[in-house]
Image 1 (cartoon, one colour):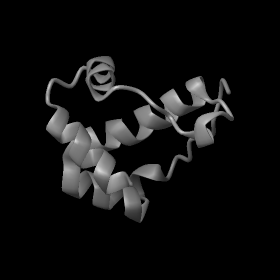
Image 2 (cartoon, one colour):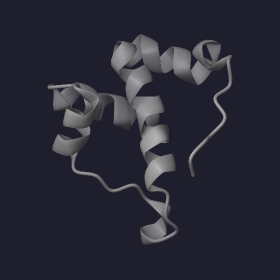
Image 3 (cartoon, one colour):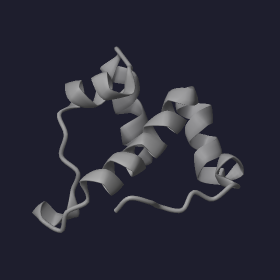
Image 4 (cartoon, rainbow, N blue to C red):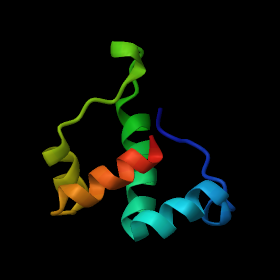
Length: 77
Protein backbone atom coordinates (compact mmCIF):
# COMPACT_ATOMS: atom_id res chain seq x y z
CA UNK A 1 0.00 0.00 0.00
CA UNK A 2 1.54 3.31 -1.03
CA UNK A 3 -1.13 5.65 0.34
CA UNK A 4 -3.54 5.80 3.23
CA UNK A 5 -6.02 8.49 4.16
CA UNK A 6 -5.09 10.78 7.02
CA UNK A 7 -8.04 12.66 8.39
CA UNK A 8 -7.36 16.33 9.06
CA UNK A 9 -9.25 16.10 12.36
CA UNK A 10 -6.89 13.50 13.80
CA UNK A 11 -5.23 15.93 16.20
CA UNK A 12 -8.56 16.62 17.93
CA UNK A 13 -9.67 12.98 17.93
CA UNK A 14 -10.33 11.92 21.57
CA UNK A 15 -8.04 8.87 21.27
CA UNK A 16 -5.17 10.91 19.82
CA UNK A 17 -5.70 13.69 22.37
CA UNK A 18 -5.48 11.13 25.20
CA UNK A 19 -2.40 9.56 23.61
CA UNK A 20 -0.64 12.94 23.40
CA UNK A 21 -1.68 13.83 26.94
CA UNK A 22 -0.27 10.53 28.21
CA UNK A 23 2.80 10.07 25.99
CA UNK A 24 3.49 13.52 24.57
CA UNK A 25 4.55 14.17 20.99
CA UNK A 26 6.29 10.78 20.99
CA UNK A 27 2.89 9.10 21.17
CA UNK A 28 1.64 11.03 18.15
CA UNK A 29 4.76 10.20 16.16
CA UNK A 30 4.70 6.52 17.14
CA UNK A 31 1.03 6.20 16.15
CA UNK A 32 1.41 7.68 12.69
CA UNK A 33 4.86 6.19 12.05
CA UNK A 34 3.39 2.76 12.83
CA UNK A 35 0.61 3.37 10.30
CA UNK A 36 3.17 4.38 7.68
CA UNK A 37 5.40 1.37 8.40
CA UNK A 38 2.44 -0.98 8.37
CA UNK A 39 1.26 0.44 5.04
CA UNK A 40 4.77 0.03 3.61
CA UNK A 41 5.30 -3.49 4.92
CA UNK A 42 1.70 -4.68 4.46
CA UNK A 43 1.52 -8.44 3.87
CA UNK A 44 -1.27 -10.91 4.48
CA UNK A 45 1.13 -13.36 6.13
CA UNK A 46 1.83 -13.86 9.84
CA UNK A 47 -1.68 -12.87 10.88
CA UNK A 48 -1.30 -9.41 9.29
CA UNK A 49 1.08 -8.38 12.05
CA UNK A 50 3.93 -5.91 11.71
CA UNK A 51 7.03 -7.46 13.21
CA UNK A 52 10.02 -5.17 13.64
CA UNK A 53 12.66 -5.26 16.39
CA UNK A 54 12.15 -2.48 18.94
CA UNK A 55 15.76 -1.33 18.57
CA UNK A 56 15.33 -0.96 14.79
CA UNK A 57 12.01 0.82 15.25
CA UNK A 58 13.51 3.31 17.70
CA UNK A 59 16.47 3.95 15.41
CA UNK A 60 14.13 4.49 12.46
CA UNK A 61 12.14 7.08 14.42
CA UNK A 62 15.27 8.73 15.81
CA UNK A 63 14.17 8.01 19.37
CA UNK A 64 16.95 6.82 21.65
CA UNK A 65 14.65 5.90 24.55
CA UNK A 66 12.86 2.62 23.96
CA UNK A 67 10.82 3.10 27.14
CA UNK A 68 8.99 6.09 25.62
CA UNK A 69 8.25 4.11 22.46
CA UNK A 70 7.05 1.11 24.47
CA UNK A 71 4.82 3.32 26.61
CA UNK A 72 3.25 4.77 23.46
CA UNK A 73 2.77 1.35 21.85
CA UNK A 74 1.16 -0.04 25.00
CA UNK A 75 -1.21 2.92 25.16
CA UNK A 76 -2.13 2.45 21.50
CA UNK A 77 -2.69 -1.28 21.97
